[in-house]
Image (tube, rainbow, N blue to C red; front, side):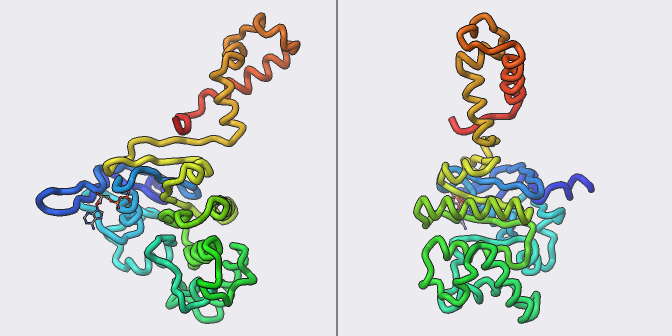
Length: 285
Ligand code: ADP
């Protein structure tokens, strides 16, 4: 595997400038690498370049300079962009809402048109709607579904051609907290079970906390990156910084006599805490 193939997304100095006179640098030299199978969220204030980044990765817009590779291919050089978008990238964008006159099943079949025959489309849409828990809603029209169910249809549609990558722009934006959390759980499950890479733009910190890697954008740049651990890892990190944790880490047994733990137990806790220390940059201030 060469270096480029290792990454499902790789950008180097990716820049997008709008306008002639007073130029806006919507993306200002973004270097990003996302490995196959990651689930990554992108946060940042409105106007910071999140949608522009997704548009570049999805071949919906062209960089002014710099490179963007998706699945090892230089996106600018891809001749058949429609095929690339159908096969390699699934979209969950606000502007790609469900078509109101088509059933859930027909909506899921739209991206498969021209790529597989009717029978195969039928089987695949059924399989996908079952996967997202809507096996009993296949013939419903969008207005007969709840907001959360509609977003599930959008997830199924994004997965229609089994793409290795799904780009989602504010997928939980119009949902209440519970439906939003359920949708994120579905995305996480699909990420784990199908190995699909997800890049999700969100304003919601609770959504971002569901993922292990959070990119924060400002003024067209990635200004920060947080790696988030499991709840246990997070608890351990808090513990490390507490007075009690520091006594373990600094071998201050004598100050812990009140805990009545034996030397083996002391050492086990110390190792648990110290192994976790080396882990990366930490979450959310
Ligand atoms: P975000 O998704 O973080 O809200 P965007 O990527 O939509 O940010 O926008 C980044 C910047 O680029 C903003 O200042 C926005 O006004 C500008 N911008 C985006 N699209 C266009 C466009 N088609 N023409 C001119 N400016 C644009």
